[in-house]
Image (cartoon, rainbow, N blue to C red):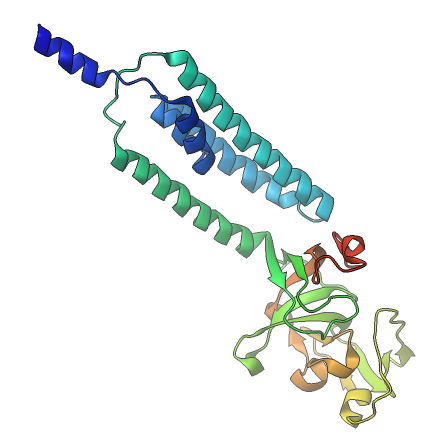
Length: 282
């Protein structure tokens, strides 16, 4: 009888509330598994995946992105709080077959793997974060700006004025950030730094010019007729941009996404930083 009592005592281990809460913060639902509530933990985890994939569709503006992140953060706190409260209420607890360190480790691996897969799905179909590598889009995008890009499908339209991300076969697939200036079928010409579309000057309040006249090809180009699936792109910083004047037109299947807003401007702490936070691209 004494031996049976000792075995029972070994199987009785109260749950630690702080550990249950911490585990669910690290991996959603893991604290519930630790508490012996694996079904509840699996449900919380599945709900988080569903909520994330649903809300990511609404990241088109900075405010919506912040709201979605706040909801996810609040949800994680709720799950952790539930695990903490449940552990406090349990008192004595009989260990279950899945209360093993390797089971917890497996749950962590599943959570991490799911996070990687979810990130790939989001970046491939919804939104992707970028960092501006150069000043070719000054003054609109500063070097080092971190901005959100909406992934475009083959059926999505591409309009004049869009700031887009595209790859070029001329540079081994390197990604570029430029603005759409010319659309399929249009005639593009540059005369003394002024862009003409089908013979009419294009209003470009975003364009930046200097007085340097070192590269005639940069300031005068065309006329050039775009094909049925071709777009003419230029950097806003016209004197420091490697764009369609050198790369040629961009095919539609090379355009991957549209820049939407700055989520973390460059030069943190300098004057004007807060004004640019969340700035949307027209």
